[in-house]
Image (cartoon, rainbow, N blue to C red):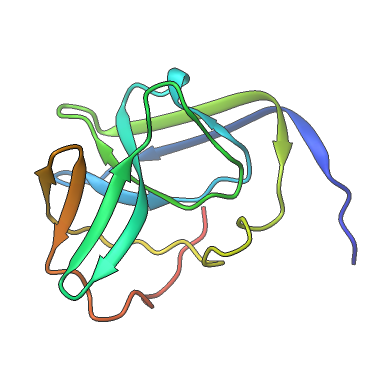
Length: 132
């Protein structure tokens, strides 16, 4: 079955984090305008090397394209993430070259000059999937 591309008049996403959880993953079918999101900071995976996963933060005010998997870290004192968009182009699958399932695992990280390095990453990133 072929799907027609379309724009949603309003698209929204909301997630309440469990107590003590700060890191999570996300892949939305619409673009994320970071100038509209104040509850967290978004990161892209830039490398995996032995026991270290390297993340790079998105610039403030950037736009994350629809279907792009990202990691995010909630700001201190924030527990709910809410994202919405007007006249949003909707994609039916993640951007080419990315995994098709959102992986939900939380790891501790350390700041290294604008990049975060996850400590003790998994030996395999193939965990159970969960779609939102």
